[in-house]
Length: 176
Image (cartoon, rainbow, N blue to C red; front, side, top):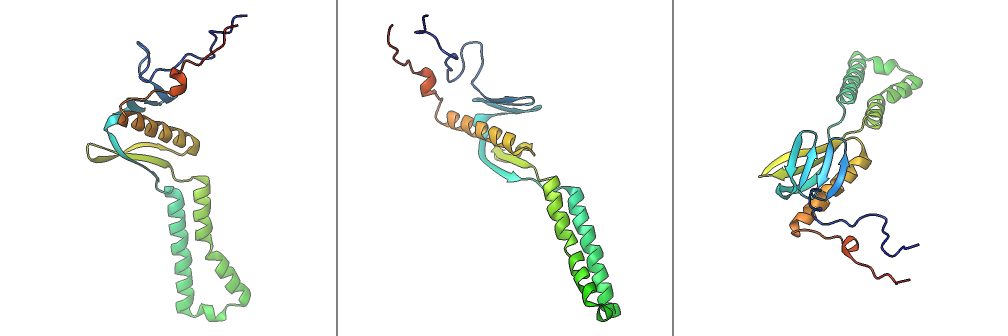
């Protein structure tokens, strides 16, 4: 059995081989990151033009935010109404405990809203001095992969190309 020339995968070239296009760093449906371009859906950017890359979290879910706001207003209004009418003086100790527990409802709603519908992860960058939202995802794992691929592409562009030392090395193999 001749194993001398056997390899498990073909070596990569830094900018791809003739006809294959640039090196692919990440590819999923609707998202492609190569050394030269970053494409999300119908939007596409040249990686060399992107600067000041940073990540943030998007806004909280509107439904959860509104639920917290409405419950806070209703509970606060009820507390003020009881305070101005003198109803707080006639309450028992159990009623005070219940009123204190009710004041926790907005906090619990906020925690539940962030748990069920967390804010999206966002990748922002500047192109031509204008800050743009480049990518947004609620999947933390996918977001991390895309962000690392874009940053790797930026590094490859800033160093004027990239060669994978393991892919381009010609390891010594003994003749059998």
